[in-house]
Length: 183
Image (cartoon, rainbow, N blue to C red; front, side):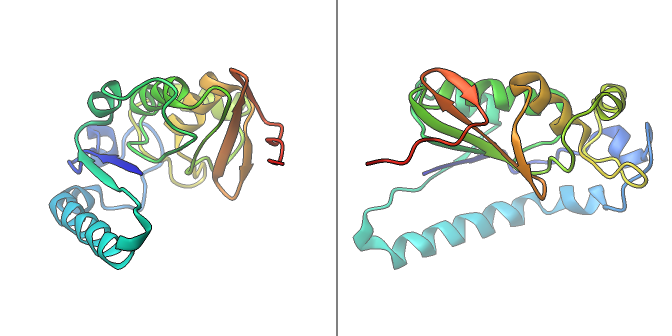
């Protein structure tokens, strides 16, 4: 299991100012100030889990680095499951998904993530293209524009339930069809 996060401030100036669309109710300054504490909390939980489950042999690697840098070091096709939940701005999500497409096992793999509050349609895609540097658009839109646009560009259709999305890779093709059950 490999966990990658930079644990560094990520709010754009547009997020901090609330420009380019309805402001979010989130306090981005407070979130950005908690990066170090979040890293220490994650490290502590991983270490506690490994100590509690020592006999299982589960290996957990915690990489503190920007995703594009850390993912570039990894071998193509190395993962059967990739969960994407990083910076929500378009360029970063697109980069994460491009790496995920390369890193997923082409014979039987799943790429999934969260923060896709709505399946892309022409209206949401047009709005997303206007707000590439925003993390989240509050009311009345209530969605992560970068996630919406990048998922659409990388995969077209995906399966989605309650903001959680997924797509399968089977024989080098991405599909929304379920993976066959193992015999």
